[in-house]
Image (cartoon, rainbow, N blue to C red):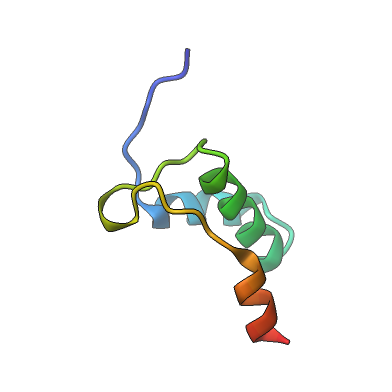
Length: 60
């Protein structure tokens, strides 16, 4: 069983950015990690889900 680690969201974003081909891929991967429960947010954002459709509409 994998051990739990305490990382900041910035740590996760930086790690994914190192291997992602684009900013969109990085964003989609981080969102998937959070929404799937593989990465859990704490504090005010504990249990939050991220909706990428809101960012897609704003960028259009």
